[in-house]
Image (cartoon, rainbow, N blue to C red; front, side, top):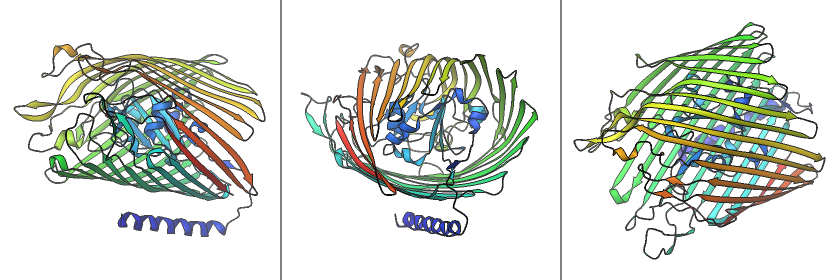
Length: 639
């Protein structure tokens, strides 16, 4: 902790001196200017192919984790081992490591296991959250087989000085405080976010694993997090922009036993990371250049006294990109990118430090015909330690066949390379396999979009159908008493996704916002591993519900705002032969806020009631989730 606080102090000092430099420049501009930066994923496909989490939703969830936000507002399945345990997500029937998490252009998937713990990532860390459904390995690299989640920090210029403070108290010992200080003029923008979050999570639950279903209180489930995000952006001239982002965070999570555990167990996990991203952009009429590099350090210490385990895992990851985009003709552009990723990792389960270098070449050709048709084809070739990997590609098209109507389609070949754990793990009863092949998959989807924008209302509806097949799925199986990973399984999935976004502004005092999502997912095993029963063939994948839906409705009246969020999750199978399942459940959450002004400062009082209907549910079998609970907070802004 001392080391973390020492480094955080250094960042604060840098921030202070940045303010000193800004104070000497002209800051009299009163217009609020936002740098119009189009994300690379939009450039290489289309904004119509991406779900953007509405800014009102982000504001309503800025005291929550990404796990809570996405489970209630996106077309994903969250798999969470209780309130303080690991949470991952599945999209379109994919595995947890088939979703890439991209922060300002850099993939944050864990290099050891390929996952990302969404419980530990606070929503407030990002200014913008976008979701690209379907495979995009050619753009985002290994792991982006089912979807990619994009977390972006966007600089704001000409805003002057601003300070935001947010305090929150809630049920089960929840407390959080976060502070944002920003200052910008026409050429520089600097921001510092610091946050502290703590929850005891001692809530009552019904233990369905014991006779008589007794009511018990969850123990050993506390979570404590603190961290900082520093951002600094510079307009070097009319053509160049430099962004620097640094994210440091410390997490302490108690891991409770599940309902069927016998006796007292104590498990705890300590996570710490430092993430630095530097991004330089140059743009002229026909060419744009982007050079960026990121350095990422990760530390994980897992302690479990019931099995006398104390395991330490660390990694250092350097990612660098050189990207050139050239407008060859008026409506045709070519992008060429070179990516290098060097990884160093240590683990108590590795025999020494392990290294890996990944070098990739990416090309993309995008063209537009008659203002109606957009076509984009991209491909990626990669070397991992001088070993050539499978070629991946993506083909995207969008046709504006009528004034308010669009048709788009995607076809992509995707892959996931074996993780360090898959390759190098060494233990008494488990051993990695250096001869593993990449997981390979193909995804195709077609979508219909209708959108209208009028003076008083905006509506956008999208319906997408998709199909995907994944081969060489890596699965750990026992061979002569030792668990080892093998390329064993084949999975097929298809489904439908529906999104509707509606905004109505009745007058200056009344507005309504609705965001609704529904998805149907049919994901089945087509080929099994050698040790699995034939009973799993053509069965739905575990923890992949056929039906999911959510809707967020907010209504603003003068200084008041009310919102309601409904979430439906269908039945989920917990066994591969589909003989056991979790029942479907419905959650309702309600929030209200009131804004008022005192001189130059604005204030917001808000409250939330989560799980209003007191639904008893589980996201993972035998791991309880809280019943009805509340949150109360105050936020104030000083300009």
